[in-house]
Length: 434
Image (tube, rainbow, N blue to C red; front, side, top):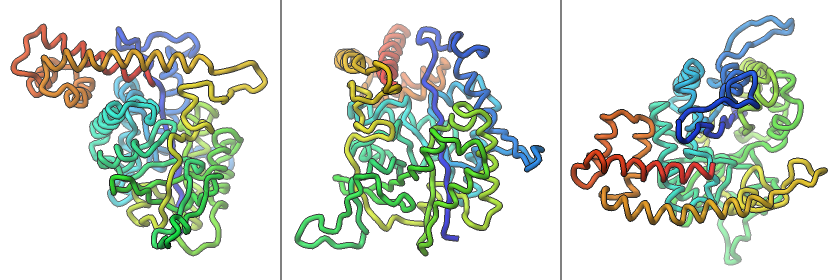
């Protein structure tokens, strides 16, 4: 088989907890549900863990776990909420990854994601590393294994972010086609005229059926996959999810007659399957079923595909680019020109002063933290990276263990309280960028 299909779902909700209570309060806009986490769980996360597979007569022929048939990532703060408040749904997600490891020769379908969905190219170097380290720690805790790939929030990327991913052991990520600048065959040799063999794909024309190698300034490299643009657009904004058979046909028909292996893959917001589009979980279930019953292509995940098909092409990316802003990463720090409703007098001028206010706050928090924490800790920044273990388990025993491991000698109860305040300041200093 040389034709492969992968559907990726990026599942995420922002942390809605009141920071003083660590609990989600009633959100009237989510009525009749308590809050939006609960509403999206009922409409999307739960149905995809137990999707109804229907026949042509509208009869249920099976109940399937969609997560077991797709590639997916879940925001760590969302998965932490589900672990406590949506236990059955959480278990189905974790079980789906376990089943995918068995199905795809040891390569799980779950991808990791930085901790709180901040725009990585806009983070400080220190925050980028902590975001990745915390995301990896939570992934290991939930799924019990090392991840091979990491989804980047809004697929926002620059070279420094890719370097940080590789430094933490990540092998691949997924980007939008228009984030690729140029490509070439790996075995092509450039002659004396630098870059003669490169092909410009800045118009989004990169062949998304192939994996690519991105060489980094450090001498290391990372694999990048660019998702199929038109099918992803249909999922997000079209009506393809009204019919699972049509969804499958759209994906299968995207293959051409080339003899080389081809991967048709679609990266979408996971909430498309049930929340943004009612009952789209059933369309996804039927599409997966159609592909599995067909002889035209084979379902796979990114990690398995890369294990079997090493990149034969290399790529260079656009710096500070993303999947959701044609202006790069500007929508998160300026009035870039993106509009939700072009017909209205709608703007984003408020974003620049808001971002600048956050940055000014961080410029004061970090020196204060470093100065005060240095009196209590051997290495304030190493301790911050390790603090995710306390966020996950705030038991007295675990806090004592953390303080014993990172503290300068035995800390008094008062010193422990001060230390936890300093580390919480750092946690919320990053969460403001969510």
